[in-house]
Image (cartoon, rainbow, N blue to C red; front, side, top):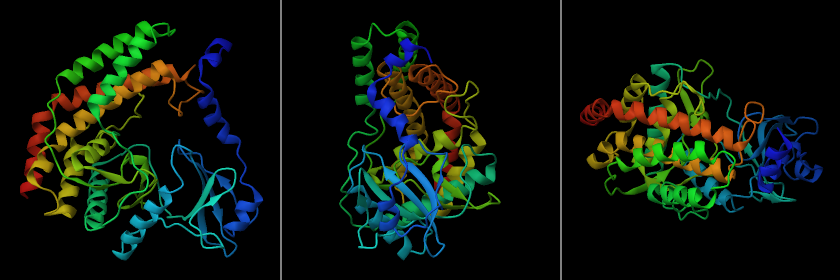
Length: 364
Protein backbone atom coordinates (compact mmCIF):
# COMPACT_ATOMS: atom_id res chain seq x y z
CA UNK A 1 0.00 0.00 0.00
CA UNK A 2 1.31 3.48 -0.85
CA UNK A 3 2.15 6.00 1.86
CA UNK A 4 -0.70 8.24 0.66
CA UNK A 5 -3.20 5.39 0.82
CA UNK A 6 -1.97 4.37 4.25
CA UNK A 7 -2.43 7.90 5.58
CA UNK A 8 -6.00 7.83 4.28
CA UNK A 9 -6.92 4.82 6.39
CA UNK A 10 -8.49 6.06 9.63
CA UNK A 11 -6.74 5.23 12.88
CA UNK A 12 -9.61 3.00 13.99
CA UNK A 13 -9.00 0.68 11.04
CA UNK A 14 -5.31 0.40 11.85
CA UNK A 15 -6.24 -0.47 15.42
CA UNK A 16 -8.59 -3.18 14.15
CA UNK A 17 -5.82 -4.60 11.98
CA UNK A 18 -3.52 -4.58 14.98
CA UNK A 19 -5.78 -7.03 16.81
CA UNK A 20 -4.17 -9.74 14.68
CA UNK A 21 -1.09 -9.35 16.88
CA UNK A 22 -2.96 -9.88 20.18
CA UNK A 23 -1.65 -12.66 22.40
CA UNK A 24 -4.06 -13.90 25.09
CA UNK A 25 -2.62 -13.05 28.53
CA UNK A 26 -1.73 -15.82 30.94
CA UNK A 27 -4.32 -14.46 33.37
CA UNK A 28 -7.04 -15.16 30.80
CA UNK A 29 -5.87 -18.74 30.27
CA UNK A 30 -5.83 -19.31 34.03
CA UNK A 31 -9.29 -17.83 34.55
CA UNK A 32 -10.83 -20.11 31.94
CA UNK A 33 -8.63 -23.11 32.84
CA UNK A 34 -7.21 -23.42 29.35
CA UNK A 35 -4.19 -25.59 28.66
CA UNK A 36 -0.94 -23.76 28.01
CA UNK A 37 0.30 -24.23 24.47
CA UNK A 38 -3.11 -25.29 23.13
CA UNK A 39 -3.97 -22.03 21.36
CA UNK A 40 -4.39 -21.92 17.59
CA UNK A 41 -5.40 -18.63 15.98
CA UNK A 42 -8.56 -18.91 13.88
CA UNK A 43 -8.10 -17.48 10.40
CA UNK A 44 -11.76 -16.76 9.70
CA UNK A 45 -13.92 -14.03 11.15
CA UNK A 46 -13.66 -10.25 10.85
CA UNK A 47 -14.94 -9.02 14.19
CA UNK A 48 -13.73 -10.88 17.27
CA UNK A 49 -10.15 -12.07 17.75
CA UNK A 50 -10.59 -15.86 18.03
CA UNK A 51 -8.46 -18.85 19.04
CA UNK A 52 -9.15 -22.57 19.20
CA UNK A 53 -8.01 -24.04 22.50
CA UNK A 54 -8.25 -26.97 24.87
CA UNK A 55 -9.28 -26.99 28.49
CA UNK A 56 -6.93 -28.58 30.98
CA UNK A 57 -9.15 -31.66 30.75
CA UNK A 58 -8.82 -31.72 26.97
CA UNK A 59 -12.23 -30.31 26.00
CA UNK A 60 -12.40 -28.33 22.74
CA UNK A 61 -12.92 -24.63 23.38
CA UNK A 62 -13.12 -21.32 21.52
CA UNK A 63 -11.43 -18.31 23.16
CA UNK A 64 -12.45 -14.83 22.01
CA UNK A 65 -11.54 -11.26 22.76
CA UNK A 66 -14.84 -9.52 22.12
CA UNK A 67 -14.68 -6.59 19.76
CA UNK A 68 -15.35 -3.31 21.59
CA UNK A 69 -18.24 -2.56 19.22
CA UNK A 70 -20.18 -4.97 21.46
CA UNK A 71 -20.86 -4.30 25.15
CA UNK A 72 -19.76 -6.97 27.60
CA UNK A 73 -23.43 -7.59 28.37
CA UNK A 74 -23.90 -9.13 24.93
CA UNK A 75 -22.81 -12.32 26.67
CA UNK A 76 -25.97 -12.22 28.81
CA UNK A 77 -27.99 -12.39 25.59
CA UNK A 78 -25.88 -15.26 24.25
CA UNK A 79 -26.33 -17.16 27.53
CA UNK A 80 -30.11 -16.66 27.53
CA UNK A 81 -30.57 -17.80 23.94
CA UNK A 82 -28.14 -20.72 23.99
CA UNK A 83 -29.52 -22.00 27.31
CA UNK A 84 -32.98 -21.94 25.71
CA UNK A 85 -31.74 -23.75 22.60
CA UNK A 86 -30.04 -26.41 24.71
CA UNK A 87 -33.23 -27.01 26.67
CA UNK A 88 -34.89 -27.70 23.32
CA UNK A 89 -32.11 -30.21 22.46
CA UNK A 90 -30.66 -28.08 19.67
CA UNK A 91 -26.91 -28.10 19.17
CA UNK A 92 -25.37 -24.75 20.06
CA UNK A 93 -22.11 -23.33 21.40
CA UNK A 94 -22.33 -22.56 25.12
CA UNK A 95 -20.49 -20.03 27.21
CA UNK A 96 -17.95 -21.59 29.56
CA UNK A 97 -17.70 -19.62 32.83
CA UNK A 98 -14.45 -18.64 34.46
CA UNK A 99 -13.26 -20.52 37.54
CA UNK A 100 -15.14 -17.85 39.53
CA UNK A 101 -18.38 -18.50 37.65
CA UNK A 102 -18.37 -15.34 35.52
CA UNK A 103 -19.57 -15.45 31.92
CA UNK A 104 -16.73 -13.19 30.78
CA UNK A 105 -13.46 -11.73 32.03
CA UNK A 106 -12.44 -8.10 31.69
CA UNK A 107 -8.66 -7.96 31.34
CA UNK A 108 -7.45 -5.40 28.80
CA UNK A 109 -10.66 -6.08 26.92
CA UNK A 110 -13.55 -8.51 27.29
CA UNK A 111 -12.66 -12.20 27.02
CA UNK A 112 -14.96 -15.20 26.85
CA UNK A 113 -14.79 -18.93 26.15
CA UNK A 114 -17.36 -21.08 24.36
CA UNK A 115 -17.67 -24.77 23.72
CA UNK A 116 -16.51 -25.70 20.24
CA UNK A 117 -18.97 -27.41 17.90
CA UNK A 118 -17.02 -29.63 15.54
CA UNK A 119 -17.95 -29.26 11.91
CA UNK A 120 -17.27 -27.33 8.71
CA UNK A 121 -17.89 -23.66 7.98
CA UNK A 122 -18.04 -22.54 4.36
CA UNK A 123 -17.73 -19.22 2.56
CA UNK A 124 -20.25 -20.32 -0.08
CA UNK A 125 -22.84 -23.01 -0.69
CA UNK A 126 -21.99 -25.62 -3.29
CA UNK A 127 -25.22 -27.55 -3.78
CA UNK A 128 -28.99 -27.54 -3.57
CA UNK A 129 -29.01 -30.04 -0.66
CA UNK A 130 -26.76 -27.71 1.33
CA UNK A 131 -29.18 -24.83 0.69
CA UNK A 132 -32.09 -26.96 1.88
CA UNK A 133 -30.17 -27.94 5.02
CA UNK A 134 -29.35 -24.30 5.72
CA UNK A 135 -33.01 -23.35 5.43
CA UNK A 136 -34.04 -26.10 7.82
CA UNK A 137 -31.45 -25.03 10.39
CA UNK A 138 -32.46 -21.41 10.56
CA UNK A 139 -36.14 -22.40 10.76
CA UNK A 140 -35.34 -24.73 13.66
CA UNK A 141 -33.56 -21.86 15.36
CA UNK A 142 -36.46 -19.44 14.81
CA UNK A 143 -38.99 -21.99 16.03
CA UNK A 144 -36.96 -22.86 19.12
CA UNK A 145 -36.62 -19.24 20.30
CA UNK A 146 -40.16 -18.19 19.37
CA UNK A 147 -41.33 -18.73 22.96
CA UNK A 148 -38.30 -17.17 24.67
CA UNK A 149 -39.10 -14.16 26.83
CA UNK A 150 -35.92 -12.10 26.99
CA UNK A 151 -35.02 -8.42 27.05
CA UNK A 152 -31.81 -7.98 25.09
CA UNK A 153 -28.98 -6.18 26.86
CA UNK A 154 -27.21 -5.43 23.58
CA UNK A 155 -29.39 -3.62 21.06
CA UNK A 156 -28.83 -2.93 17.36
CA UNK A 157 -31.34 -0.19 16.52
CA UNK A 158 -31.67 0.55 12.84
CA UNK A 159 -29.38 -2.24 11.68
CA UNK A 160 -31.69 -2.83 8.69
CA UNK A 161 -33.25 0.63 8.51
CA UNK A 162 -32.82 0.91 4.74
CA UNK A 163 -33.99 4.57 4.43
CA UNK A 164 -31.47 5.56 7.11
CA UNK A 165 -28.63 3.80 5.28
CA UNK A 166 -29.60 5.58 2.06
CA UNK A 167 -29.61 8.95 3.86
CA UNK A 168 -26.18 8.14 5.26
CA UNK A 169 -24.91 7.42 1.75
CA UNK A 170 -26.19 10.79 0.52
CA UNK A 171 -24.50 12.50 3.49
CA UNK A 172 -21.23 10.71 2.75
CA UNK A 173 -21.40 11.86 -0.87
CA UNK A 174 -21.88 15.47 0.24
CA UNK A 175 -19.15 15.34 2.88
CA UNK A 176 -16.39 13.51 0.99
CA UNK A 177 -16.10 15.28 -2.35
CA UNK A 178 -12.34 15.42 -1.92
CA UNK A 179 -11.97 11.63 -1.72
CA UNK A 180 -9.37 10.36 -4.19
CA UNK A 181 -11.92 7.90 -5.70
CA UNK A 182 -14.92 10.21 -5.47
CA UNK A 183 -15.91 10.15 -9.15
CA UNK A 184 -15.93 6.34 -9.36
CA UNK A 185 -17.80 5.99 -6.06
CA UNK A 186 -20.33 8.65 -7.05
CA UNK A 187 -21.16 6.66 -10.19
CA UNK A 188 -21.67 3.55 -8.06
CA UNK A 189 -23.81 5.52 -5.61
CA UNK A 190 -26.02 6.72 -8.45
CA UNK A 191 -26.68 3.09 -9.42
CA UNK A 192 -27.40 2.16 -5.79
CA UNK A 193 -29.82 5.04 -5.26
CA UNK A 194 -31.57 4.30 -8.56
CA UNK A 195 -32.03 0.66 -7.51
CA UNK A 196 -33.29 1.75 -4.09
CA UNK A 197 -35.84 4.11 -5.63
CA UNK A 198 -37.46 1.15 -7.37
CA UNK A 199 -37.89 -0.83 -4.14
CA UNK A 200 -41.39 -1.56 -2.86
CA UNK A 201 -41.64 -0.93 0.91
CA UNK A 202 -41.87 -4.12 2.95
CA UNK A 203 -45.11 -4.68 4.88
CA UNK A 204 -45.22 -4.19 8.60
CA UNK A 205 -44.34 -7.49 10.30
CA UNK A 206 -43.87 -8.74 13.86
CA UNK A 207 -40.37 -8.64 15.26
CA UNK A 208 -39.03 -12.05 16.21
CA UNK A 209 -35.85 -13.22 17.90
CA UNK A 210 -33.32 -13.80 15.14
CA UNK A 211 -29.63 -14.56 14.71
CA UNK A 212 -29.02 -11.17 13.11
CA UNK A 213 -26.13 -12.11 10.80
CA UNK A 214 -27.06 -15.43 9.13
CA UNK A 215 -24.44 -15.32 6.34
CA UNK A 216 -23.35 -18.75 5.21
CA UNK A 217 -20.04 -18.68 7.12
CA UNK A 218 -22.02 -18.48 10.38
CA UNK A 219 -23.54 -21.94 9.82
CA UNK A 220 -21.70 -25.07 10.91
CA UNK A 221 -22.22 -28.12 8.68
CA UNK A 222 -21.50 -31.78 9.36
CA UNK A 223 -18.21 -32.90 7.75
CA UNK A 224 -20.06 -34.54 4.86
CA UNK A 225 -21.87 -31.18 4.33
CA UNK A 226 -25.22 -32.92 4.13
CA UNK A 227 -26.56 -31.55 7.39
CA UNK A 228 -26.41 -28.10 9.00
CA UNK A 229 -25.61 -28.44 12.70
CA UNK A 230 -25.86 -25.03 14.34
CA UNK A 231 -25.45 -21.27 14.10
CA UNK A 232 -22.36 -19.54 15.49
CA UNK A 233 -21.18 -15.92 16.00
CA UNK A 234 -24.07 -14.97 18.23
CA UNK A 235 -23.18 -11.38 19.13
CA UNK A 236 -25.86 -10.12 16.73
CA UNK A 237 -28.85 -11.80 18.39
CA UNK A 238 -31.76 -9.40 18.34
CA UNK A 239 -35.36 -8.90 17.26
CA UNK A 240 -36.38 -7.96 13.73
CA UNK A 241 -38.88 -9.00 11.04
CA UNK A 242 -38.09 -12.44 9.67
CA UNK A 243 -38.14 -11.15 6.07
CA UNK A 244 -35.03 -9.09 6.88
CA UNK A 245 -33.29 -11.99 8.62
CA UNK A 246 -34.03 -14.35 5.74
CA UNK A 247 -33.27 -11.65 3.19
CA UNK A 248 -29.80 -11.31 4.69
CA UNK A 249 -29.41 -15.09 4.74
CA UNK A 250 -30.57 -15.68 1.19
CA UNK A 251 -28.51 -12.90 -0.41
CA UNK A 252 -25.50 -14.71 1.12
CA UNK A 253 -26.52 -18.33 0.59
CA UNK A 254 -27.64 -17.89 -3.01
CA UNK A 255 -24.40 -16.27 -4.18
CA UNK A 256 -21.77 -18.99 -4.79
CA UNK A 257 -19.09 -16.30 -5.20
CA UNK A 258 -17.75 -14.02 -2.49
CA UNK A 259 -19.59 -10.74 -1.97
CA UNK A 260 -16.75 -8.79 -3.63
CA UNK A 261 -16.40 -11.07 -6.67
CA UNK A 262 -17.00 -9.82 -10.19
CA UNK A 263 -18.79 -13.15 -10.74
CA UNK A 264 -21.37 -12.56 -7.99
CA UNK A 265 -24.74 -13.88 -9.05
CA UNK A 266 -28.04 -15.05 -7.59
CA UNK A 267 -28.68 -18.80 -7.95
CA UNK A 268 -32.41 -19.40 -8.00
CA UNK A 269 -32.27 -23.18 -7.30
CA UNK A 270 -30.46 -22.39 -4.03
CA UNK A 271 -33.27 -19.98 -3.10
CA UNK A 272 -35.97 -22.51 -3.93
CA UNK A 273 -34.24 -25.23 -1.89
CA UNK A 274 -33.56 -22.96 1.10
CA UNK A 275 -37.19 -21.78 1.18
CA UNK A 276 -38.43 -25.37 0.93
CA UNK A 277 -36.13 -26.43 3.77
CA UNK A 278 -37.26 -23.51 5.90
CA UNK A 279 -40.92 -24.34 5.25
CA UNK A 280 -40.40 -27.97 6.29
CA UNK A 281 -39.11 -26.99 9.73
CA UNK A 282 -41.12 -23.81 10.31
CA UNK A 283 -44.62 -25.13 9.64
CA UNK A 284 -47.15 -22.74 11.16
CA UNK A 285 -44.52 -20.38 12.57
CA UNK A 286 -44.83 -17.44 10.17
CA UNK A 287 -47.84 -15.45 9.08
CA UNK A 288 -48.72 -15.25 5.38
CA UNK A 289 -47.51 -11.65 5.15
CA UNK A 290 -44.13 -12.60 6.60
CA UNK A 291 -43.74 -15.35 4.02
CA UNK A 292 -44.71 -13.20 1.05
CA UNK A 293 -42.19 -10.50 2.03
CA UNK A 294 -39.15 -12.81 1.89
CA UNK A 295 -38.20 -12.31 -1.80
CA UNK A 296 -38.52 -8.53 -1.55
CA UNK A 297 -36.65 -8.65 1.75
CA UNK A 298 -33.79 -10.39 -0.07
CA UNK A 299 -33.73 -7.69 -2.75
CA UNK A 300 -33.95 -4.94 -0.14
CA UNK A 301 -31.02 -6.27 1.89
CA UNK A 302 -28.78 -6.62 -1.17
CA UNK A 303 -29.39 -2.97 -2.11
CA UNK A 304 -29.08 -1.83 1.50
CA UNK A 305 -25.69 -3.53 1.76
CA UNK A 306 -24.61 -1.92 -1.51
CA UNK A 307 -25.46 1.45 0.06
CA UNK A 308 -23.55 0.64 3.23
CA UNK A 309 -20.48 -0.54 1.29
CA UNK A 310 -20.66 2.59 -0.88
CA UNK A 311 -20.66 4.76 2.23
CA UNK A 312 -17.70 2.82 3.60
CA UNK A 313 -15.85 3.28 0.29
CA UNK A 314 -15.98 7.03 0.98
CA UNK A 315 -15.50 7.02 4.75
CA UNK A 316 -13.14 4.00 4.89
CA UNK A 317 -14.48 3.09 8.30
CA UNK A 318 -15.32 -0.58 7.67
CA UNK A 319 -12.92 -2.65 9.76
CA UNK A 320 -12.57 -5.69 7.50
CA UNK A 321 -10.79 -5.49 4.16
CA UNK A 322 -8.29 -7.61 2.28
CA UNK A 323 -4.99 -5.73 2.09
CA UNK A 324 -3.47 -8.55 0.01
CA UNK A 325 -5.91 -7.95 -2.87
CA UNK A 326 -6.83 -4.27 -2.57
CA UNK A 327 -4.77 -1.11 -2.12
CA UNK A 328 -7.25 0.35 0.35
CA UNK A 329 -10.49 -0.22 2.21
CA UNK A 330 -12.13 2.05 -0.35
CA UNK A 331 -11.10 -0.19 -3.25
CA UNK A 332 -12.37 -3.31 -1.47
CA UNK A 333 -15.68 -1.71 -0.62
CA UNK A 334 -16.15 -0.56 -4.21
CA UNK A 335 -15.79 -4.22 -5.23
CA UNK A 336 -18.39 -5.13 -2.61
CA UNK A 337 -20.79 -2.58 -4.07
CA UNK A 338 -20.35 -4.08 -7.54
CA UNK A 339 -21.04 -7.55 -6.11
CA UNK A 340 -24.24 -6.53 -4.32
CA UNK A 341 -25.52 -4.68 -7.38
CA UNK A 342 -24.97 -7.79 -9.52
CA UNK A 343 -26.82 -9.82 -6.91
CA UNK A 344 -29.69 -7.32 -6.75
CA UNK A 345 -30.04 -7.37 -10.53
CA UNK A 346 -30.34 -11.16 -10.49
CA UNK A 347 -32.93 -11.09 -7.72
CA UNK A 348 -34.99 -8.43 -9.47
CA UNK A 349 -34.92 -10.35 -12.76
CA UNK A 350 -36.24 -13.49 -11.01
CA UNK A 351 -38.51 -11.77 -8.48
CA UNK A 352 -41.80 -13.10 -9.84
CA UNK A 353 -40.46 -16.67 -9.87
CA UNK A 354 -39.07 -16.24 -6.35
CA UNK A 355 -42.45 -15.04 -5.13
CA UNK A 356 -44.13 -18.05 -6.74
CA UNK A 357 -41.65 -20.44 -5.09
CA UNK A 358 -42.20 -18.76 -1.71
CA UNK A 359 -45.99 -18.96 -2.03
CA UNK A 360 -45.78 -22.62 -2.99
CA UNK A 361 -43.57 -23.40 0.02
CA UNK A 362 -46.00 -21.63 2.35
CA UNK A 363 -48.95 -23.57 0.92
CA UNK A 364 -47.24 -26.97 1.08
